Every structure is written in structure tokens, then in C-alpha cells.
Length: 289
Image (cartoon, rainbow, N blue to C red; front, top):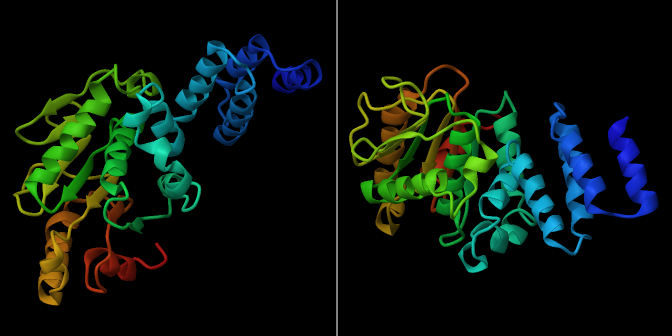
């Protein structure tokens, strides 16, 4: 087996760039995702022992290739060449992934055909909305021909998320999305309708962004993912069981009816304020999903 032969040479003769690059080239055509993941981690570890730009580039290549099937690697690759002070993921990864395994849980949920609901409660200011920006761009890259929806409590939040996702998908100087998913081309985007799409014109968009305060009638559908972010607007709403009940009813009647088929997955990120808020209610309704 070529991969094992190269590995034995590395282990017995020492690490050098040419051997690792040869191993990476072989691994890059491996169709078994789990096996490919294992080899990429090995190459990444060994590449850190190469004190040159070649080693650094090879580390990036492992994230770039791994980012096609790993949300964790995707965020790392996307921001690999950003200024350190501008990065979101690496400064927070030790806690969000190392302690809580959030990116891994999201990826396992994406990969599990039986799982239909995933809910995360995170304190304010811990980066949940920024993580959703990367999740939406990851979904757009990995499943460009699917239809997905993002929903938040207000139009302003929708606009902020939309602008950020557009930037990740199209700003080739700041992000490396198009190197991770090079075959998708440029998406069609509508600021008027808050849509980003790789699908044919007339089809429901790859990403449709809506607010609970706006109209969603006829605009978009979801056949892959329905993602919500901070549906509870403020503390006043959070303290009112009646308003939370109406919020949940609106979510169920207005948005979940936009889901196509029986296998559309729901992801909710937000802050749990009470037993009556949407995440608590959805977790109770989907216990075991």
C-alpha cells in the first residue's frame, strides 16, 4: 500500500517535505472519508515539524482538503490566511471545539441521516451568530444544489448575516472558501430578496434568509437545512410566557411549513432564557431525533 510505504519512509528516515507532499497527493484521491481524515491529521502533525513555508502551505492543504467534509477544518481553512487579530475560529476553538465539541457535533449531525434536530444554547457574546455565518457558507459549498433557510428575529440581523455570508463566499483575499469548494463557481445573489444561490434561476435558492418580522410567503423553501439564530428578540420577550408561546407558534406555523420532505434538518442556535423559549420547546418536541 503506497500510503503505508511512504509513512514507513517518513518514520524511519525522518520528515521531509517531498515525502509528505507525495503522501498528501495520494491521500487526496482517497474516497474513504474516514481514512482520508486520519491521514490528513497525520500529515498535518508531521508538517508542523518542517520549519519552512513549504510546511506551512502543506498544513493549509490538509485543512483545505479536510474542509470539504469537516466543519472544523472548513473554518480553519477559510480563515487560514486572515490576519490573526481578524480570525474568529482559532482564537475560540480551544473552548468551543476543544471543551464543547461544537463543530464536531454539528458535523456529526450533518452526516447522520437519522438526526433531524440539533439545538445549541450559548451565552450572549460567545460567537454563535458568527459560527452560523460560517455554517451557512459551508452548507452552500458542500450542498450547492440544496435549498436551505436561515431565520432570525429581525430584518437587521438577516441583513448582517447575509452580508457576512456573501463576503465568505466571494472575497477571495480574505477567505479561502473557493479553494475548499473550487467547482461551484460564483453564486447568484439578490439583496432585495435576501437569497444566495448556485441553483438554476426559478428554483428555490441555496440559501434564503428571512426574519420572523417579515413575509416569507412564496420566497423560499428548505429541503436540507432550516437554521435559526436568536429568535427571542430581547429580555422583555424572554420574560413573557405568552409572547414566547406566540413566537413558537409563529415558528411552527410559518417556517416549519416551508420544509420540503421528511428529511429536512433543523438547527437552532441561541440563548435559552426560559422553559418556554423556542429552543426549549423544540428540544422537548424532538427528544430523541
